[in-house]
Image 1: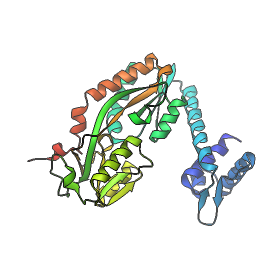
Image 2 (image 1 turned 135 degrees about the horizontal axis):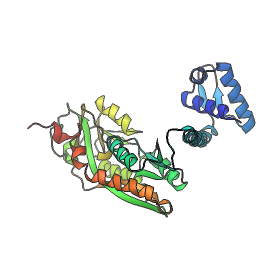
Image 3 (image 1 turned 180 degrees about the vertical axis):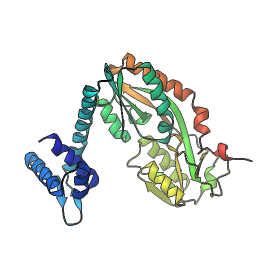
Image 4 (image 1 turned 60 degrees about the vertical axis):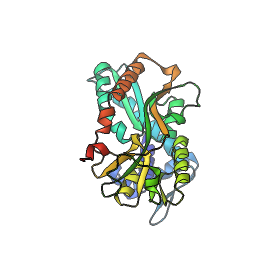
Length: 312
């Protein structure tokens, strides 16, 4: 087994195409087939099932992909550090997040300030779902994660610091008859088609709030989306309006977010292992907390804010 075999496997897993994998790796399609075959022979398991039109995964493929992807990522970091002659990094720090609009809005400023303070720290950013982020933290593959509270509050050794308490918002198009309201009452959305996050894939706290909303709205048609990004597409298609916490609401001129008159909220923040606390991590935490503390006006003045759009 060598790195070429593993890189070939990663590309084939992600493209599900032998020809496209060959193009990306600048090798022939038969060479891709040969490398995958050699890898399968060495492992003693079948990783792909191929017919004339499709490439299917086997039960062994997904866990192997997760581990190999992590190994190659760490290897690339090590190579980058070893071959970077312009800078000498004394240490590294890994940050895992969800790629939400709020994170994308604030992280650039956070990281810019941090790099100005810690010039010798090699930063590694990666995105993952909330379960993967927790597992990466516990296995020490990540130093700090952005997360919801109920994802980590029962885990020993994890320190959680709340950054934001988010109530639920009604996210819709500007054409919605409710788009000019300052606040949405449950009575306003009776029988409205709604888009909720897939309860199997979202945090328990979110799933519980969604269940409560469905109980209050027994006559509403409910669509489930596997991600916030899919929900945005569904909203723009006028399939329905979404209900979601503010920190994943889109920053999009075609959409508007309005707070729902419910007492429930979701706690969002950062988490790290107590044993890994260090000055370099402390500096990042301070910057994150300060940025979020000063960013309420920025968040609410974003293009997705109802008040920012309203002229009456």
